[in-house]
Image (cartoon, rainbow, N blue to C red; front, top):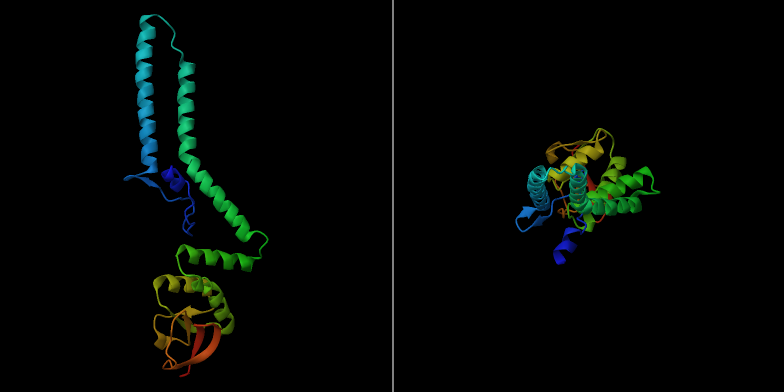
Length: 214
């Protein structure tokens, strides 16, 4: 029964799961392959059953019981529907419960912060990355508007998030030479960064550097 436990286990909810739950595979095929296979085989059995009974009743001049056949097909289709949807409903129920715990009775800023933390969790980042949003908000308050900033680490995901969360107050550049400030998050910088000096510190290894050449 281990495969059933795995099948109904809750996957880690990722930020792009809007109307989607990842498929679960049995052997080499996803679960819906077997549901459709069973559906088509069942309908084929009903078709064969209907054909032979229809011929038999016609020979015996008996009236075929259409209502009974309709009930059987309806029960079969409903059974397929509920069985195939069971995992989806169960996981959605768990996600709704988790959302209620995380977001109920919270103000808007707390909701934002928790939602961003969950994004970090779904990226499987360690806990010392979960306050990336808080660091950006801190930077946004400390740095003058319309300043140009350079972010390290410079991975595409973090740059995209920073552009989105800091817009329109601060602008992200792809070169430190063009920057007024450097936001350094979880990066070991040398004691002296040429052209910049320490400006503000959010926490250990989460600092803001300010250009010393302007």
